[in-house]
Amino acid sequence: MSRLDEIEARASAATPGPWSIRTNEKNCLIISSRQTQGWVCVGDPDAAPEAQEDAEFIANAPTDLTDITNTLRAITKIHKRIQYGMEASVKHGWVPEFVCEHCATPDGGGVPWPCETAAALEKLEKS
Ligand SMILES: [Zn+2]
Image (tube, rainbow, N blue to C red):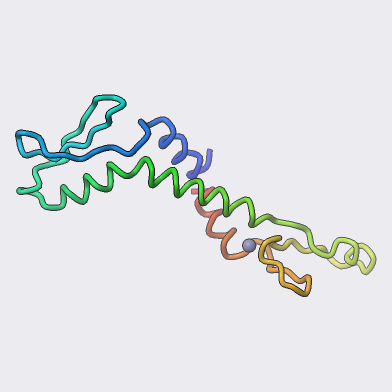
């Protein structure tokens, strides 16, 4: 399972967002979901001002992660490895090369595989 698969699995298993943020009677920032009725106290914003940013981060994580993983999957689909010059390589005894289908140049040339985008995505897939 790739890192991206793991992130998607955690995001899809969690309660869908958006979650809400409020302060309770004990001055604790609460993150809650209407769906589960559960809540988590992140901290007292008067004692720890970063609690507000933490709460914003956590409350938006379900929708943010879903958007990000969907975008990464879409980018992965368009940066595909293809074999370039197969006919010419057979005819002339060249070693065929792999290029990125999306990053091909207008003259029919290609960017050697993996292109910069595919290389960055591969790091996420393998980590
Ligand atoms: Zn590419």
